[in-house]
Image (cartoon, rainbow, N blue to C red; front, side, top):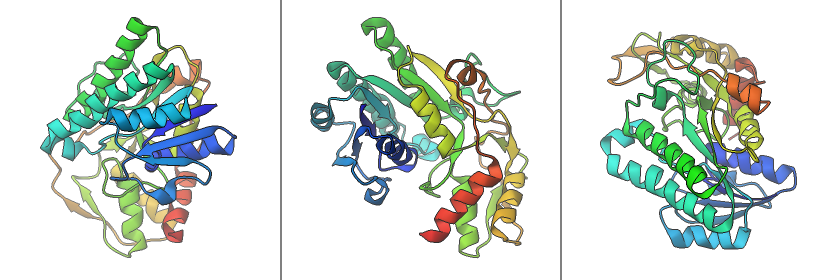
Length: 303
């Protein structure tokens, strides 16, 4: 398969590019390296430094790659930034996504789009299925939802088969501690430094943590589908305090975390129902939390 991976030098995108290259696909990465790294781009994968907000950059990589599929993982991924700079967030996550969709249309390529679960559903009373009320609490969630709607509209208008995947809290190697959703990376990096971690609030807030390797399998399973929106999570919620304890078990770190005031707007409960992905994509998460944390810890220690 010929593929373009936007954001392919970043956290999830670099793992997708590596999986595609490992099975012998022709892979082209488009990344502006604002948060990604050249070192994450796998050997044999062509990197074009460019921006999804510029048609010229998109046309250059699409003309060269002639892709069958575009895995669209480039994004402004920080909720706090979206609140502070909503126009910038929309430029990347709405207009940038629209430009990617149009580039794909010009070249007859399917788009597999990385969306978000927690930021779209808002507070969850139970594991949220795809038809749950969509109640974004941040411009980031609203922008990702807008991207999904553009994909669905293009599917109706142009007969395309674009797919949106709503990720839970993804963690694993290559994750930057400074980005939203990076609490695993934050805890483990602080432990590697021998430093004390901070938990905001009482630590009872829960999240659905899914390992990046499992997410990559879901992304690949979505190719060739005839459209749709799918949750990619474990269906199991874990409190931040329990996550910290799990990180301590993996690392051997024995210093308790400090607590600080809860941050305004933080969700108390976020968990996804992955049943539709299991039924229609044949995908289920396979990596236990302990195994995923161990892989992440090993990567951090080796850097």
